[in-house]
Length: 296
Image (cartoon, rainbow, N blue to C red; front, side, top):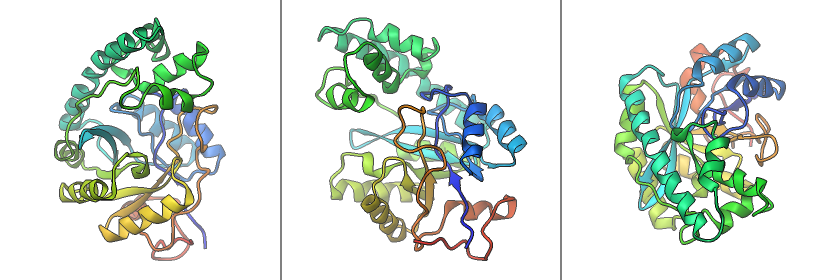
């Protein structure tokens, strides 16, 4: 059976990725991706270039974004897929989110300076292309690696970017209800991103899924760059439990940083329904048989 190679989660230099939208499109196409979405953090600036490049290469494309959300004192991420990038509600909501990034980043710089790491804010800002509204922990991590404070991005996040560590500064993002409202107003589909990454116990994780579904959430990222095989199976079970569609995305940021490259993911488990069934009538690439069933 032919399987659709969908990659619905990646980042360009419009947020914390290293490549341009066009470069990502060519990399995805070279890897055999048939359905693609660029999902920059709280930003839609790369959408026009991404869509144009994808269409020129013959890939199906849906406009996307990854939005930071506060839940139970932690930051979780929600993907908005197939959104209208001109939606006033979404555009204004994302602008509000970006406006809070610089203040947090300046506090992160002060926190790192207190433990002897100076110039982190300025260095991260350079790596963010001089755009303070795009500043993220990833830019700080790249600076710390480049300056020799850590050997890898993973070490940075372990030593500096967790709660209680120097460099960690919490941020109050929008809530699930407000965020999913923006996505809904933009005609999009809300997908809970990489759920295994959140430090929730089973009770809080259940509450997250319950609230996400209650606010109109449609899907969950089952297969992604940060999920190990047992986690793929766990969130396939959760997708079934909450009647959510399943998504697939590499969460690719940069060639030297990402655990999984664009398009280089295992297939979704057979028991889940892919989120792209919602767009079946618009896709040039589709499975050879009805039902969109995928192999395990």
